[in-house]
Image (cartoon, rainbow, N blue to C red; front, side):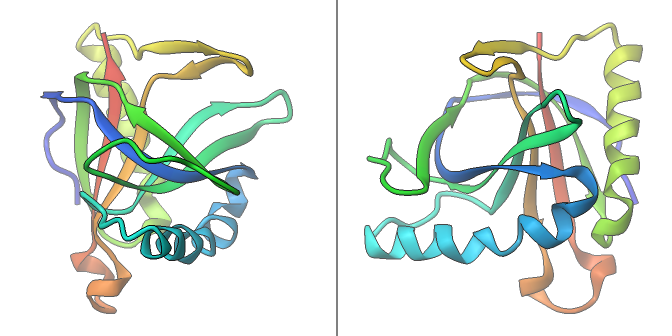
Length: 164
C-alpha cells in the first residue's frame, strides 16, 4: 500500500552511519547486518537515536552497484570513528511517499515516487562529492519494521528524495 506522494519541508538532520557499496539485489542480505554495528557504536558513545533506522542511497557506481549508508539520525553532530561516519541530511524540500508492506515490493514504491517527481516537474538535487555526482537525499526511513512484529503488512517505510 502506498500513500499519495507529497512534498515536505524538512530541517537539516544529523546522523551516524556505515557506508558501503552493494549490488541492488544484495541489499537484503548485505545491509541489515550493519544495523547492530551502528547500534553498538551508538550505545558505546551513549547516544540515543533521534529517529528511525534509515538506508540512504548515495549514488550508483560504474558497475551499477549502489553506494549506500545504514544509520540513525542523531540530535547533534557526532565525532565519527572506525567504520562509523557522521553526516547530515540537508534541509530542504523532500518528495515523500509512505510504503506499507514487506520489503519485497519497495522498488515499486521508488518507481512510483520517481514517476510522481517527474510528473510534478521537480528535479532531484545532486551533490558533487569526491566520488562524483551523488543524489542529494534518497532515503528509506524504516518507521515500523520487523522489530515491531512479524506481520509485514504493518511495516511502514517513508521514502524521501531531496528535490529542488
